[in-house]
Image 1 (cartoon, rainbow, N blue to C red):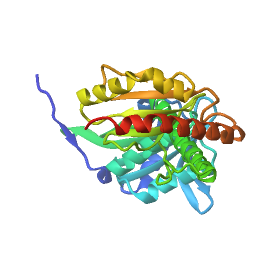
Image 2: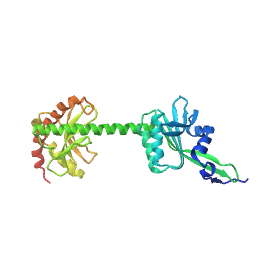
Image 3: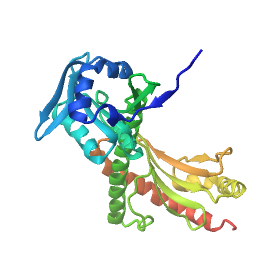
Image 4: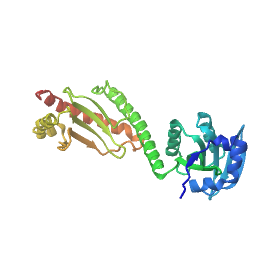
Amino acid sequence: MSIGKLEPVPLRDIWKHEERDFSSWLEGNIEMLSETLNITFTAVEREKRVASFEVDLVAEDDDGNVVIIENQLESTNHDHLGKVITYLTNLDAKTAIWIVSHPRPEHTKAITWLNESTPADISFYLVKLSAYKIGNSEPAPLFTIVVGPSAQAKEIGKEKQDMAERHVLRLKFWGGLLERARQIGFNLHANRSATKYMALGTGAGKAGLSFNYTVWSEDKTGIELYIDTSDHTRNKNIFDTLYNQKQLVEDKFGESLIWDRLDIKRASRIQYLLNMGGLKSDESNWPQIQTTMIEKMKKFHAVLQPLIKDIQE
């Protein structure tokens, strides 16, 4: 039995011009793209004008949502990426399909980012177009999805957005706390700047030990002495030295503390948690939370710092 060899065919040998040739062909053969994307297209319209631009193809999906299709029989470029976004937003489309011959990595990454960053009902496809023949057969086009929307991408995008929002809130929260500490005259963290991280710390006078403020997104804030000298045994010895004076420490502090040796981890910590609210609290409550954190840190530091100084290196 004779088996033919699949041979690539240059796209420009089939369609000389994107708009006149390829877009016209695709308008009449839209079912081939439908099969690849599993989307049914209706009401296909070619060269629809958007301001001074013309969209290669505009269609509707099964739900009547607008779909724009931008064709490029060459490597992706910034100009066409901009057109894809412009057409989608100006036509209130829900789906954008960018058909190209050679997707460049930076544009593949851009379409991935758009799928992660846009609302759940917005979809971007980057589709590679190739053509093949066997022997003297007619060339056959092949559509391949390079990037498409997915529930996972939208979830990743939501997580990134939530993280970005937390970073902004933390910067604002820490900025307010540092300013309030300056006004109160407690300068333990005066050399620190607001940060996007959940902890804001300063050295405790011994390498690897720090006094940290902590804030969570939910309903908690806290203060802690964090112990991490990069040596597991050293960390546990320091913790145990302080823990042996637990009663003295808590009597002077005036409240119980959380003594967290974290045996299976390298670090250890001593904590005090406030249940007054966290980042998601009404911002009008932040000043009270910050003031309480500062007051507790002031007392916490006064009790522990002398004991830390006595720890042998």
